Length: 171
Image 1 (tube, one colour):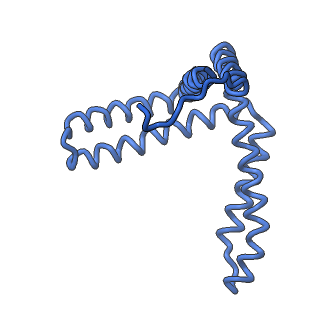
Image 2 (tube, rainbow, N blue to C red):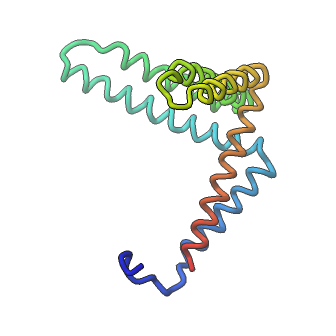
């Protein structure tokens, strides 16, 4: 056990406080999943807006370097900015967007899993999981709030887990 060096013997207050904060936010996400989804969508909208602005500004620099118009960069930048504004304008509708995004992700990844199951040692199991993923994706397409709720509980689980890890590290 000496290979890892001596253990620290002092209490780490920042780690403890951050761990408690993670646990608190995790509990809040479970208690108010609608607000948690809105928070997630707000963060996505902010990131999309900044990405769009930086891509828009980068378009002009790229045009100088490449020497020709790169219209797809401009189109992508404008699309990011417009989608961010739409998300900010109607956060309730954006909750549906998150559910649909997760549904399509499940479906496409599951088709990929089925397609690649032949090269797996456990091809039957991979195919079964792929089919279950497609079913889950289709269910989420018909009720996108299920996908949004799933993300909230996945986030809450992460927050609980990492909060406990931080509290344990504090001691």
